[in-house]
Length: 125
Ligand SMILES: [Mg+2]
Image 1 (cartoon, rainbow, N blue to C red):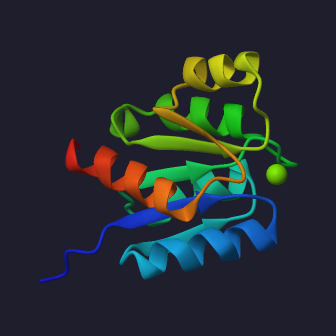
Image 2 (spheres, rainbow, N blue to C red):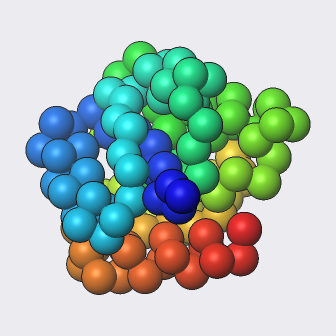
């Protein structure tokens, strides 16, 4: 039986996408990537996923708008969303939570901490 959980990584940096993909594949997750918010929505509609990891600063559609649009659909009301951003100020975090994020991780973060947080959120979901 396939028990792998799928994570959607949304980030405009190819380096970050590859880095996070590598870390999470090592931790036995299946990965889908998207380059910005609108690509993220398209990927989400095409592939069922268990958790979203998203950047904030992206062209086309930023992370806040992306999260708001995901949350606007009842189908994704309880889908866990984690922001991973270099923005470390309180106002950015508040904006992220107001948009509907469940957790805010400041980049760069340790791979162990990221995997641990993801596992913790998925256990309760
Ligand atoms: Mg970015």
